[in-house]
Amino acid sequence: MINKGKIIKKNLFFFIYQELEFHNFFPTALEIKRKYSDFTIYFVFTNFSKYKEIVKHKFIEKELKKNFKLYVFKGSKNYITQKFFSITNNIKLLLKLMFGKKTLIFFPRLSMLNQDFIVYLCKFFGGKIIYLSPDRFCHSTSLMNREQFKKGIIDNKKKINFFDYFVFFNKDNFIYNYIKNLHNTDSKKIIHIGLPNMYSTWKNLIKKAALQIKKNLIHKHKSYSSIYTIIGGKDGDSQFLKSNKSQHDSLLRIINNLCLNDPKCLILFKGHPRQPMPIYLKKVLEKIKSKKIIQTSVNVDILSLISKRFFFTSPTGVLTHTQNVKKIDFSDYRKKFNKNFFKGYRVLHINSKNSSTSEKLNKLIFDDKFFSDKRNYNKEVDLIKKNYPKIHSLIKEINN
Image 1 (tube, rainbow, N blue to C red):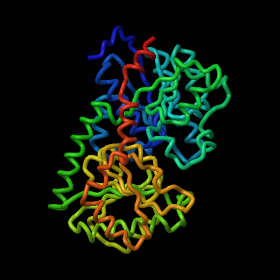
Image 2 (cartoon, one colour):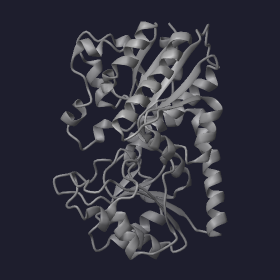
Image 3 (tube, one colour):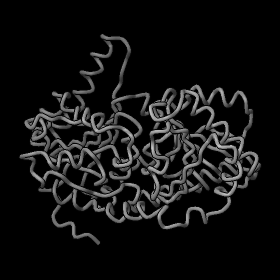
Image 4 (cartoon, rainbow, N blue to C red):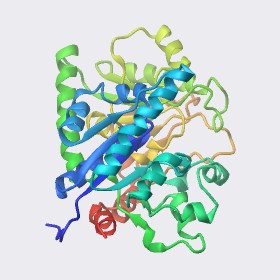
């Protein structure tokens, strides 16, 4: 039991722009709610369509409304109407900041300093501005160069110092290390709270959700042998792949091999949150007309509990973002990229164009021994150990 001490009542606002940050912020907020009931927690969704996409899963909507207060910003493509909505959206926050308890606002991106009205108003009424990283994947495994990460970082020290705290889930985070090493940055402002998918509240919730999803699948499909999940990238996401057709070809071969090796299985396809229905998927579905292929937007933590394997058509943060599921990387990499880049995170790579792929895939699907070598999971074990949940670190600091 955590010794909470005297907790000063506060309003906590989590700003949500897209699905990525929601699935990290939501477990964090649930854990705070369970351990520190004195806080009033708000979720502010700045994009109505993204909000509707997130809450179409009823268990998410139920937990959101049961535990938190919601603000969903309205929007319009009409310039005048949008201006009106912007004013009304800000008025809602103004009233809460003026007449509510002390406020802490969690922003998922450093560029949120552009939201001058919100941040200065919060500061004026004694609130605090906190950068909460949306990432939990291992940045050291990212194939993107560091300049791409730097685009999301403010180099201006005055603006950096405007933030009261910087909060991170994973120490293997380029932005975490970059800010930590900035001159004149107070190290006390940097808080590490561990992987959100390891919080006990979230783990209990996704177990219940996974059981319900399996129950629904049995009701609809009567029976099945196993569930496999394919994680797809966006169209044209070929910066690291041989061609624009790579994902199409990889997806087609994965599905054909699964249908051949495990004909009674169900195949779930989860696309990128910004492009859930890519063109290459449509083309593959035109060739393979099967009710066993199901498009899904279910959270990857839940999918990892119901899936026998994860397959990947291109490199993605999910390769290290999600733990405790066996992963097969089917990416058709360009020659200059190391195929074993993700080794140690329960990831094995298969050459998608090799003539013996079907035989190798069959072995990987049914025989876990290929993943049992300690070198294939040692980095993941170390990742969990180094980033064990410690939400109390956050509460201790923000309660001052």
